[in-house]
Length: 110
Length: 113
Image (cartoon, helix red, strand yellow):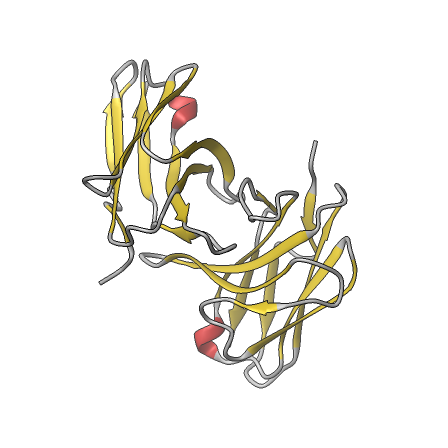
């Protein structure tokens, strides 16, 4: 079983929809949680960074962490075609290295 | 803006060849990483380095080695390329000693025939 599970999609939504992307994990030592966005033929770029449980908001993006359920989410409000990308969750405990999910491919249709 | 560049976007090599993938970052970051990305498997860490001449194995180091002679440059070496090393290779750097907030290069698509 993978340490981090992420539904690969593909997920297709109409423009303006609220998008929910999720990851589950098995390692209770994970404390730092990140979301990366990867456009086609590009490297990933950091979108959100959170520590421990709770919510963090940045514009149209909200990251949510529920450590008791070992579940993290990224919500995108008022989704735009420019949000079409693959979204990767990443997390770590005390070690220096990140563990990534396999990514969810999102398409926002105009 | 942090910039991480990789020497090639696409590379085709034959089985048994020695392959060098170069990565350069321009932000004086201490920490650098090499990943490979495969469909359904996500990013898997091959090696990382937190200082010049220092290296640590990641999750899948077999068949690879690395070199970091200068702070800004981190090289991945495939000693004898095999077809199962066909993949997208991504380099990243991070200022934070924890390795968080990594900045990625555009990737090198390597095909081994």
